[in-house]
Length: 212
Length: 331
Image (cartoon, rainbow over all chains, first blue to last red; front, side):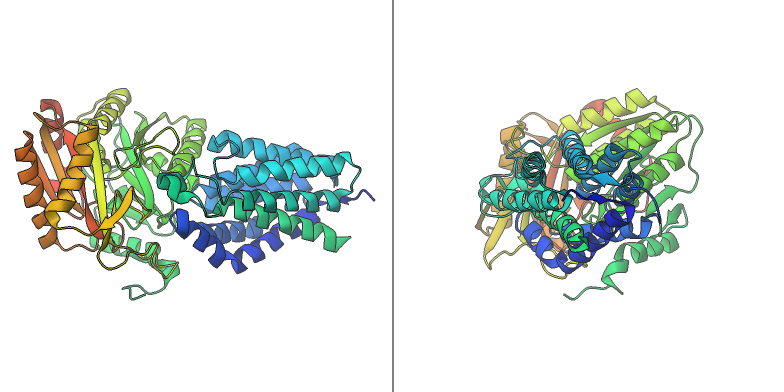
């Protein structure tokens, strides 16, 4: 099985991610209150709700994600708005006009998202940020793809990688973002941006899996 | 949570509607979250734009007016504004001589202002950004996002605003803004936390008899948590931290004892008395004092001390006329 995704599939992903962000806003905000300023869940909920409202009907995958990304940048605020908005826009641009996209294209989009986030946020792996979820997500996706796994399977691998990456942020000391001000006191808490990255990628995997 | 609000979701919009009603000298768009001098833009004058999360009032909207900011954008509580707002404020402030963005050094503010500056330049508005990073509580800038922008934001906005009002060019206004930031330091202490309305519970917890040294203006934790002390001890800890970073002996200082929102003015004056004694005892001369809640953190209790090592030119610009809702003299 290989599989492809069209604009409607990606729109369904954004809707599911928004639903889960709304349901999980309290947990994400608690994570942020521990080492940041306690607004991450609220911001993500607001940003993804705006993305859902901006989803174009009948558009190809690339257009769906660039529109969603533009809305997230416009409506979210905080650091997560520009970072998630850039991630979605870069992925959308990487898709170009392809419709539908295949597993290789989705992998390229995921890598473009990681590159965009790294460039804008100037964060590296180990800084205790969303990059620490995205790096293993991309690596797991690519490994699954190389092993001949289909689209949904690759997306599940990425979600698993992101979840493991988020867990791995717990013992890290933050070097970027507001948590960095805590120094050693940031150790022992999961990074909220890594946690929400895992949530969003799990929504992608579930959307593509349930569809199949 | 007991707050004087209608709905947690409407706090910022409702407050902006109130600002509009109380200050006809401002052009307020509550839906867009922008506050603009009603007489902006001024042809040939450099525009000053700042903004940030709400909850720090009167910063920034309270400093929009003659001799200070041309426009401000108000984000959600403790959340930076979004690029659309910043672009709208920038366009409203642009009188053909370019726009200075005064940005507090927080990742969210920096990223949103950077995206807005790029988009504004696509519309042929020259934008220069100045980062305010005066908070000495952040000791290690290499392994953090760098020092936070706090009380010195008021100094930068006032002094750069005065120079812009005199007709200086964008590069000169940016240079004086950077000079003020470089010569300024702040240190804050929290005695009780604050509650973001939409979150509904305190952003951190302090046990009875504890205080947070080096707290940020969003209730984010600081250097260390210690046993709460007297006003003299708190002021000593704050000024010692500042002095260790930027020696104060022999300096002529602008000093702000800033209430964080939940500490009454009477206690701020108790702190100011201690600060004045401390500074006199360490060979520094206060030439311009200011006491009050200017850069607040919702209802957080505690205070922040900010100092700027003045030069005759900076003193002159500080003294220049200003007419805004929260700062007004000489006019």
